[in-house]
Image 1 (spheres, helix red, strand yellow):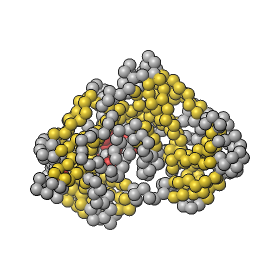
Image 2 (cartoon, rainbow, N blue to C red; image 1 turned 90 degrees about the vertical axis):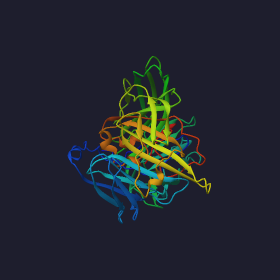
Image 3 (tube, rainbow, N blue to C red; image 1 turned 30 degrees about the vertical axis):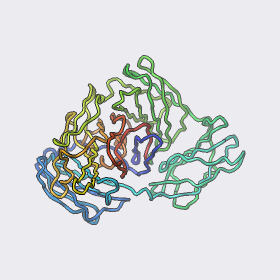
Image 4 (cartoon, rainbow, N blue to C red; image 1 turned 120 degrees about the horizontal axis):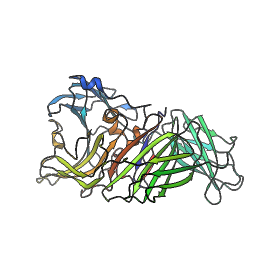
Length: 462
């Protein structure tokens, strides 16, 4: 299985170098937890793989009653016995505030849950000296790996040895590499794939004796049953090895009468998995829809979009601070499994004119296009919205995933995208995000991996 596969949709021209690992398959629906009247619910907080100790975690029942306030131990673990349907909240799990306080809530938890919050400082990467085989006709060399983004090596003139420093993150000591050369027209020319390469910081990776294959294979993609509202699709074609994402390419295809076809060059990877993320256009200006399909790599890919989408948002979500309610409208479509919202709020103290900002991320089972933020317990109740607060919805994601909310609840508030939960040899994830970030705040927030927000392009995160 593809244990390290993690897809993320990111802002245009932006990246996320966080490392995210994927289980072989989603756990089965939590039937035993549903049946239990009570049982342990655990939250583990880690930063760069190390437990965040001495941090407060609030466990509350569905009616808001405080079950327990527990301080994380040296491993970053806190646990309490709960009944189904409660919620777990912590504030600033990865340290002090930056421009805004960071509130995170798991709602609809069940006995037996082991929830996780993990993050990276982004300074855990390594650098290596990398040498590729020489291709006398190449004008540049693209190096892809299972634990790094695409990086270029200079051709250095005809016949010169292509070498340089590349950067990797989260390899675990071993990585897979794919090298693709480009000809004078900037088109893919040759490629070589090498798996199971040992890597170490400041080490040397010499693949100069490997042999290129030529030409680069092509993949034919077809979209069928595209709704009439859409005239083209933007898509990300990704190739993954068992260690993670190897190759990805952002493309588009025109749609005529519900059908579109295109052919793209794509190198081959031993036992590769092909992941195709499809976004239809034009949008309605409020929401963006996406469908993620994965299957063993093949020379043809067919994406059937008949009845594939969630009900598209038809109005920007709004927050009522006085009632703590978030409301939006949606058209007809598939029912989501869960909703993930980030509410950005601010409050000004009239006496001191000091303004406090906070972002509240909450994930919950989907029930309707309205939900009420829970009442937080004493100790963190300053983050409960009141009528005089300013608040907007920074992001709203709804998604349908294999295994439903039970399968993703544990790690969702640390994920960088719904595709993080792609599991098994084949499958489909359908999700929806807001077209644009909410505006109107006096100060922006920049913290941790933002939820899947306003994704203009699709890209795999390691």
